[in-house]
Image (cartoon, rainbow, N blue to C red; front, side):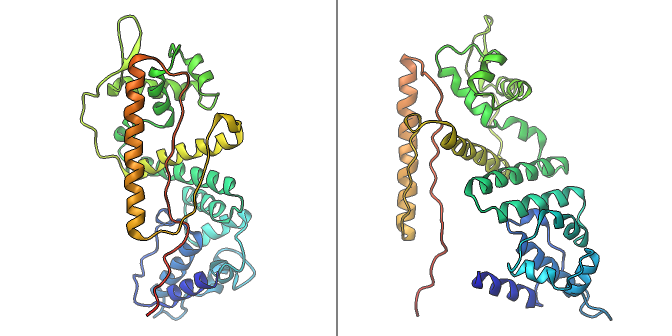
Length: 305
């Protein structure tokens, strides 16, 4: 906490940085966003008769405490959800941005890992939807990218006894997707050529006629978040005999990290190859999701001089 406070104070005192107001959607920490907002406002008004201050922010937010923003930025207080609207007003955020700020606050302040993951999923999906509405993401590209429902339906081609009727797919998906979501996912797979339907109505895997377009990073993050959240649900929903969850917490060098990444990629390719060969001779019984995750949980320590 002390290091974070020092970093925030340095941000506030840095007068050589740009004075443009920050963009909320670029932040994963609402305190850093508020710190940058305050610093930018200070820079904009430093030559005016009445420079921007914490008291001015409080007045704009209709808050009695003149240092409330300072305490929030420094982590000495949490921002209650009831206060989000007031902070959004003081930051001149519109309705959508106010909703986004609320989701960001929920994500940052969630103490339980499950709540934090769920809040991150909501925030990720909200930001993708906003980018689509604003035209920052091409909706045609978005519709071509299979979501988690599409991925599972695609894999169900190799599952025994699947008729691809909406009611059956809904049951197989454990009721986690609506009829419209299932129909849309199936239709997109057929349009893209990932799946093909013959004259008798039988569905099989096909070959897409179009070269895949570059997928925006925001859509990749959304899909990965959906798949990881399915894993979180399985932790609570499925018995230990139906799943395999394990973890390792390791201290690694940069080279060791790259070596493990390589080994995980090779393992994934080998598993996929073995499964593809197996499905040539027989159908599977159910669809499973395998997530491979390797990510940092600490910052690199500074080497002594």
